[in-house]
Length: 181
Image (cartoon, rainbow, N blue to C red):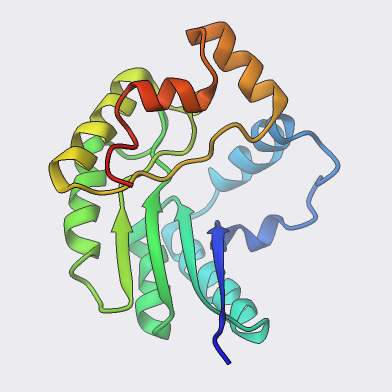
């Protein structure tokens, strides 16, 4: 019997499960997630990822697609456990850079037969247009697909329309982010 695949994970976030989950997404992120993540150290993300991987395996999940911060620590949990995963960046205006995204793309894709990496960013509302354009250039350079959160809430769609006159999908597509997958 084949294992399940979880196509949307933030594995180290297991410590936030059921934490103020009655809040709308934006309030939950701004008031609870981002402040708590700011306190994490790299080693914390390693052990939280190990915990998440153990949970996946007990649930029949044998591979996943994962986006999170502090990827140097986080990815080691996957390599050390031999769990199959595809990583992407949680690139935004507050973490990492385009240079780190490209370095991770090159390094992680050669790290293990069970790990791969695709360019990505957190979301339109947390990532500046110049960063988004940079992600599109990297994806084009390597003919790679791009992963992100997109149109998750009515608020996100309305705010993007107010900013750019387009939905998040229309806006990010207009930047050439989905040319390769």
